[in-house]
Length: 178
Image (cartoon, rainbow, N blue to C red; front, side):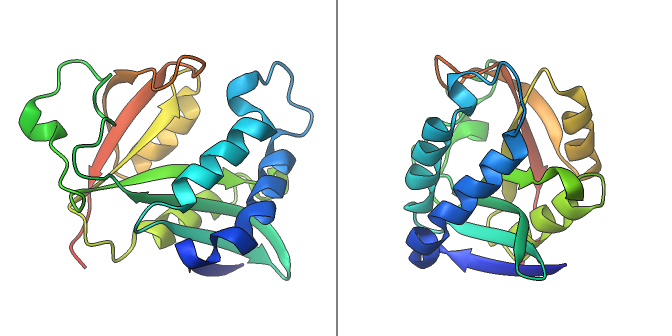
């Protein structure tokens, strides 16, 4: 599998590819809900891909995109932590260069359980200048949370970042300096 990294300057050309992979990942899914709808995902892609420091890693099998991971640094004063109970102001203080938020890790069904998600994630965060990375995982998916724990993440609390979002587990890990 070939991994390629892209920044926000490639967002427009990557948009449809990301939407297509998302649809492949949810093909046949029942009870998807509005939060996982194609329209909502397109909104997230558009929102995240315009953030300063946005980075996207895409895995290819020949010319076929098999999955992706993307994220961006949390901006100064970010509300990312505001709905996670029990965190100190020192922990939640964002400077714009402290925390890299992994927004999405998605792998098409034929490539799941092959290490593809790990490779995409690792390529995304390798060499990041931030001191830590964070991500949210649907609390109803303990196997996914367990995978993220093998990547070095620790659960720090639960959150519901949007009214239509499921309850999510906020996770954090320390990054190795570049």
